[in-house]
Image 1 (spheres, one colour):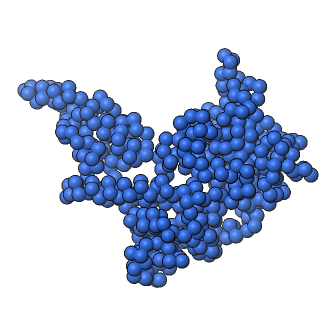
Image 2: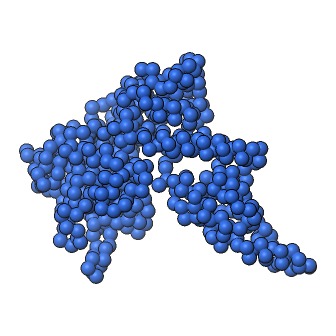
Image 3: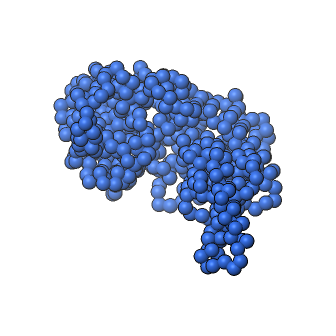
Length: 506
């Protein structure tokens, strides 16, 4: 699983501020007090621009048993706290291979799995820096993918044969230069991997002897371990070890950013990043060591109260929201959902994310098309931990894992039916509203269908469970709604007091 990495600007690496309530290690509390002028200047840098920011106190949950407030009243709430063993049992398959896989499904209940990984990462890069010593880090400039047969022992033999041949033709000279460049490139890869203890063989430029070491490196970096050096692996190998060490805490800080979201509900990525950076400064989490000390400390408080600057709009009790979905059946990667807020003089784009829409399937030997409808619709409620009742064409039956409430459900843990009507029924907890369509906006138990950009639904609009879930949390925070209640056989629901308009277009 690849982490979304965020990098603090150098201006944020300032003297550490003490955590509130005396949180953190004694060593960190002995740091000299930070210069107030410097901190103030840094905050001003964070909030430059036309946006109107206001300071407000927020309580951020930093415990190891976090549960989003919106889910707390659900009868299935404990499923958010599931271990990977429990999740795999509900999925009926080994979907989760390691604890961090839970984040791919939007589960951010505990920091605990990140602690040993950060300890390992810090120690790994410190040892690598010792091995590298004063050597310069090579830069891999080859832009094509490097695969198993990029260089072999036969490549070395061909170089020796060409060097022994005098005189050489222009073609032979070009071929010799190409072979030598390839070998030199692989030698650079082997050198970097040797510093990081992934490769212990001879530095000979033979990639056929190196691809397994590359795969081990990729596993350490939590990316696809195919042993092929593509753009992502090349960028990581080209990153200096010092920078890797400095950024080793970013996966854990990305996790912390999710907690900041649930405290502030700031859904705009840049604004959320700024709020998180401000929280990081106030807690003194500006080095990998300080991050490790803070989150590994058993005396860490359950919550911290911080004053953060957020755009003025987030202080409102409600917002005038609408959703725009642009579908592209030809190039599915371009299908996306956008969330807008209507303000006094303008409409503001708050959030955009990739979505999956309907397409063709082969069912029982027949090709069938399941298009997502286009037009003007409304969302009138959010189903929480919904049930899924397979239609007649589906192979699944009710009772299968995909149908039961939980992260393994076909709808994920939240869904909202599309409707042609905007009125709210007098009995809002009924299973079916008049005007509802058989299509929903929902999360998914198959995040790879969104990640690939090639997925297709049976007419619904599908969002990634990690990221797309922000939309549902945000809608429930800023749209007046009734409490969570049983919606008969559909599961549980939070009915809105006013419908949210949705437009689906090509």
